[in-house]
View (cartoon, each protein chain N blue to C red):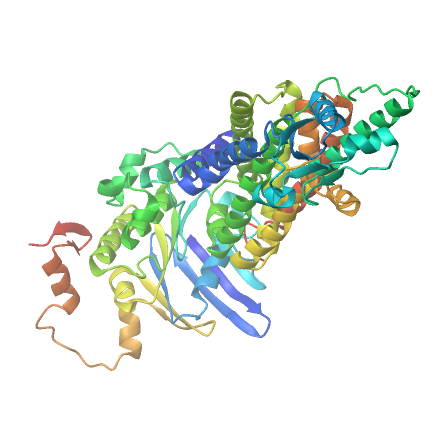
Length: 364
Length: 255
């Protein structure tokens, strides 16, 4: 019969084992905070400011200046005019391939005479903001073309966001990193513990006490649930205080903070149990953990990945954990979160049963 | 009644006959020593008796129970120091004893047990920082938590320095005086000679000789008698480093 007292006793020694080992403590709680600070600092606010465009205006008339004025007034770009005696391409290279705009000398006169004239946009193919600038220049040029012939635009544009508020990268990063810590800390630790305890016959030793393997596994699950809750509050705190992350804290995160650790403790246990040595357990553990870490939407939304990788992400359990946390904490999409938690519950039940089945206290 | 009854026990791993048809019994209150070289089958035998391994054939009764089928009940009445005993690296001996006491729901005073195995000075040192001898004493302390009637000590002094071994011997003798039965495996012959009431020598899975140490010496010895005119080198070593010397079951300080 399962004894709460034995589970708590085992939890207590495991807590000592964990907290007195600075490495485990660091990777479970400190490392994800460092990640949130680094990623937050790199990406927060980067997309909300205007894109800098270095413009060279050789036009002798007024239209060139007017064109740049319209570009600036959109607030999408910030135009920095460089002197005409400099080479624009050299200047852009000195700015590590920034975006450039070249207006030729005959711009105004050609417009007035009706001759075709080109504006040149320089951009770095690796910089996606160049596409936005190109589209903007096209739009402004069309406006000038219509003005010239005195036409009135028929189709208007009205912009409306599909979500009720605008999200930043950090809003997305906080649930991602909570998922990251729920994945990594039980996986790395349980794979190692279960293979090492098996090798050193420590499980056999524990089997000589009244502690059952179910109780042993339960105490590990409880410990990692506690860690995931602490991690949740740490991430939320730093995300909000340092980067003004717009994330919601409500009771709907609780199932994810419980089922997530249950799944990864069981999976780590299963890997450590079915592999033959501590070394092979480590390799298999890494093969499972690393692709999941990068392809489940931890650091960036999976919608930015190629279609085949997006499809692959849907077979990764961490994807459902992170998507669920996002649905609860960021989008408030509870119906989809229910699907995510349902998937996780089914997966956890399967893996937990397999882990208990293959995990042996004693030998035949 | 015997603490342990083994009849025609066999355990094979493929072609390897790890335990090959052995029989023996351990009387209540005796120290029974299983001797033999590495690979003789001692640990396999002990693990079968502890309920950690399933036997192929034969009859085994430990405290009247089948250790494989009734292991969970049996474990509450036996104490074990497994070969290569280990504990959680970051826990102290006193925490270890408290942990086992909670698991066994045993109402014991952890400090009394720590004192019984002479571990008072390092009771708050984490396990990974203990010496080999101190670690084995933690094992012994844990084996005592549930006040076992029968103890399995699988090579409890392997790798220990002479003074640590002698301290361990003192504790084992005091356990015998308390009326507990002990099954001791060792490959130190003098250890068996000093401690055991009965010994069985195993080789290649079989028991090749059994009896009291003196009976075996009488039966298989050369008959030559040697007059000891001095202590052994081990006695001198222990005296020089000032370790506690076990003398007829008492711990006395060497002068």
